[in-house]
Image (cartoon, rainbow, N blue to C red):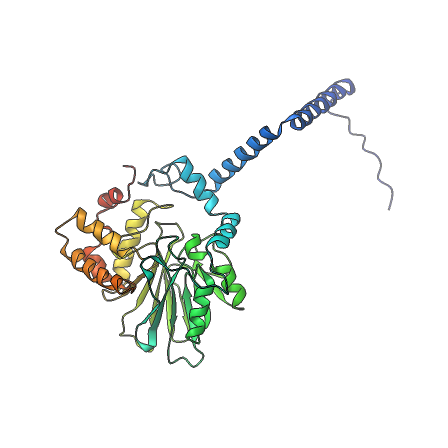
Amino acid sequence: VAPREPSTRPSPLPDPVRMVVISYVRAAVSATASAIWALSLRRWGLLSLGSSLLYLWNISTLSSRRRNSDNSPCPEHGPLLRIMYGLFSTWLAERVLGHLLHTRPDEPQAEQIGGTLPSVMGPRELRIKVVPILGAAFGGNYAYLIWDEDDPDRRAIVVDPADPYPVLRAAEEERLNVEVLLTTHWHFDHSGGNATFAREVPGLRVVASDRERGRVPALTERLADEQTIAVGRLLVTAHSVPGHTLGSAVFQISSSAAPAAPHAAFTGDTLFCGGCGRLFEGSSLQLHASLRRLRTRLAPNCQVFSGHEYADMLLTMAVRSDPSNLAALRKLRQVRDLRLRKQPSVPSTMAEECSFNPWMKATPLDLARLCGCEM
């Protein structure tokens, strides 16, 4: 191969001008480097802090009219909350919160508010164990184990095991082999145990909505709206319900062995007994459409298993705001009786929620007001 001849293309600048430009560039680089080295420790700290705050602001997914393409109503989120929400979504926050809040493998679980005890309920074909987790940190979280008693392999599904070791112990007590982990949304108090659970259960399928993008730890599968997967005779159907977060999902579980039995819907923070989760990423119009979707798709006798023990608080608010809401008053009395016996208030039913839950009965305008949205 012949050697390449040197390029004879003339320089775009005459030599004297090029030398002047090079001199100016070198002087600018030297001055910038000197200025950086001359920064005091305090100024370095302020520069780093400012850069970090700007980064957290930019990655925050809190909703706003400016960020919503349809300019629809959403709550007013201040700058501090926007930055903190960005921090909440980082790997660092996940590690710190896990260190502070997770139960260690060899220690007893922290007691939840009201001393809630684990409970097993449902027919043999669709057995459900309610596992209180995370103590009082987030007002009382619930994880769930779901299985078919007649499955010889004891295959099981787990929902939102944000504190992994108490849920793993609960599965061991029931002699279950957990195959699928369902995550209703990315917030730490629902997905914070995924990585540990996946490490402890090799081959675990970690499932979330297909609208989640990189924020659910250990995720292996995304389900589209109304997509279904099976675990033995248990059928899981995903429902996309943007509002609380844009990637929120409700997982409806039924049994092919008992098609007439009530289905179970695991609603995370989208739907509570007597209320709904706060709007962080979506608009009130999105939440209204999501709730309408649930009213249309879920049968009246479908059992609602929410992610938190908020029933007493939300039903009390419902009765105070509307004393004529007798259905809420009756449900509140039932809930308080259960709580006195340290039992979880879940489940309610879709028929009940449609009768007393102000969010489920609201018009789009009323829902925007309930959610504290800008109008």
